Image (cartoon, rainbow over all chains, first blue to last red):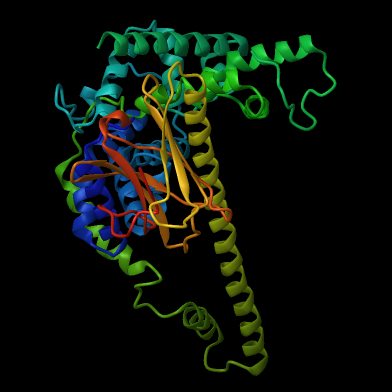
Length: 192
Length: 283
């Protein structure tokens, strides 16, 4: 279940209603809370601060213009905002015609990465960071296919072409990678 | 995987059992990639058709839902440059001013007419005026239908996403070892409205099924309240169909066992920080 505090749920609903009524302060309050979260994901996909900034700004401007596009019946606000961010960043990546090649350049070299700071005090964020650590324990070739699919929006066939591997190999690799990650994730939750 | 009880139309109807088993296994192998969005279009079509009648495949998909959501939060935490907030603040004024509803700009008619007057110059003839009006009518019609199609697409995407979420939650509940239930009887005399909360403590998922609820206008929705002492915590919003039936995947900060009771009230469509109307059901 969702682990945001009750006051947080009420605050978000209140702020979104204010945004709908054209209250700039309310939109900026949402930016204060979620700006770093959105920027982090955009940067993770695009790996270029200037593009990540543009995508972050676009995401909040979309929220400003269409404050009612989030349907509370669909799930938590932050996950919806991140889904919008992920789609926008992948679209931007495609427009730039950049191939998601390697993650060899650490993000630390291109942007200010916060070492041990929580940018959102919710169970989802902490879960996500745990998952990042677990992904680091996967064999490189398994981690690579998860990242290509999730952060760069590539399908099996596109990955096969990009990696120069047979389609069957890619399918097997994706399946094994996710199964293994899920096992590690389930175990981490059991042990917690 | 389970054999389908009610095969979908045109779905494997004449295939021998072994073929169906093989399809089932193939789909099962693709489920992790499908959850991640890595499947190709033809694979997606096969999986979607199969999910309609295979609870085991559905449960497999549901088991990846939390992992998939957590991936959204897995980017290394980066600090957005300070000036980005300022840039955003500055652009808010200009973008809101461009919105049609709050716009001081001339209306569409005047703007299109302005285009023609610019082209025509001082000797703007009657024939040119008629042509301009005809083109103007076409432009206005295109704008109208373009907006309608866009609105329908948005609604279709929203409904598909909502259905995915409900199917996932249902799968988690269906496969849970332990399922808890609470009935919510009508709060007003002679009302037929009632609801049931079902949840799985193990899978951390809860659903609400509402029946015989009064229909609401489009600007209203029903809101579930989780009650503990004087506290009223929102459990989510839902709408009902013309028969008064509605489903909600409940959002709660804690397992539902931790609350004293539950209630449902009609509220604004975007939700309310606290109940503002009498409950329809309560329990």
